[in-house]
Length: 368
Image (tube, rainbow, N blue to C red; front, side, top):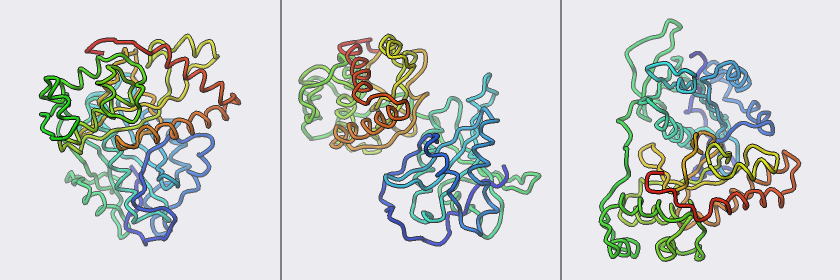
């Protein structure tokens, strides 16, 4: 695909953004599209990537296009677009996913943001049905991205496209179907679950999933879900993440996502939303990821679609921070949503809280 990628080896630029900042992928909205189209690569890289304005315009004529802006905690730094055949109806076989466009603004190159964004893209790709690789191609040249992709793990396919572009692929093994480890930690959490007779993480996770959906009273205590025999997505996954980390499995990540909550993906809230005259409302959600797959042990009844189908943004968070970070993250998102729809923020929170109230104390069962 022509003009695909910028060089990630351009001159270093001093900015207010640190390479230690967390990187996230976010939907491009009416309020951010102008800033996204204003992003620029270095002049010597312009022959290697199309403008973001062209990319976004193309996306609206290609149902397989999936695009996001790339952000640090404080800055908009880049843009990415995938071609994902699983978005087509009917989806062709075999499924294929390609990195169509990928750019980091010249002010933020050589700071590690491209690599972090690519890690998020790989994690996303590994959740797509039937996808076991990401394909891309580059235009050969002195300012091309070949070295960046090869250093990440992409490999040449041995082909050359008719337009002269050089194909690359990044393949992975099949994703795990379950999340399971022996409980080998020596800390308080491991000791507590072993005292209850659990020897493996999968047993604990299913027990936690089956607990009623309800807020714990002690929001600062990881063991509150066991002590109080209940929990929400935050308290359940905070406990599970802290447990696996205590056992040394730090590659299991606690995630904080923002999705559009509706009756389709969260059965039971439709009446509240309909009464408010809306189809969906932003909701923060916690879950785990491991080797590119998301694991949700909240225990709510499944809908006809998944919350992950309407995921707007996601980021990693530590178990110790999740309570405060989630409140700020969700509050900011809901305030932005309310402003865009001229809805009073207090009223928006009341709608959301009524949805949570209706979900409280539900126990759909082990396989939900």
